[in-house]
Length: 158
Image 1 (cartoon, rainbow, N blue to C red):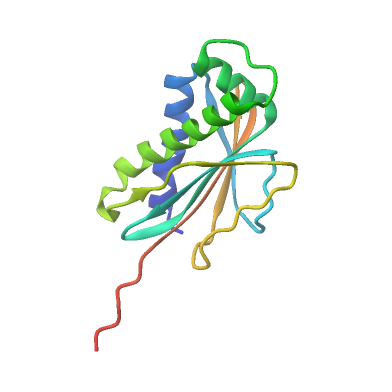
Image 2 (image 1 turned 90 degrees about the horizontal axis):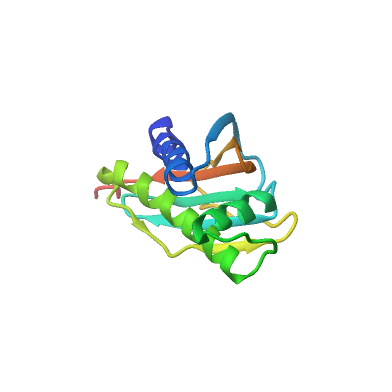
C-alpha cells in the first residue's frame, strides 16, 4: 500500500471529526496491520472498488462511538443501540467519501457501511492488500483507522 493511498484517509478522519463532531483527532503511530483482529469493539467498515480495491475500517472504542453519536444526534447517548451503530456507519461513510474525492484517478465506488461489534472481532482485507493501521487520540478517546487498498493490476496483454 502506498502513502498516497492512505494520506487522504488520514485527512478525512481529522476533517470528519473536527467539522462533523467538533472533536480534534490527533494522529498517532502508523503500523502494518499484522492481523485481522480489531483493537476496539466497534468498527465501521467500507469496501472500495474500481481501479483500486480494498477496505477501510474505522475502529472505535465504545466511548468514541457513544460521544460521536451524541455529537451527531445532538443528544446524550449512553448505550450502544441502533442509533449509535447507525452513527458509526455514517462516520465511516463520511471518511470514505472524503478520501474517495482525493483518489479520483482510481474511479472508486464506495459500498454501504457495515458495522461490526464485539471484543476481538475480525475484519478481513482483500488478499493483495497489506493494511496499515493508524492510531488516533481524540477528545472523545482512542480510535484506529485501518486501510488496505491496492491499485488493480492491468490485465496481461496476449
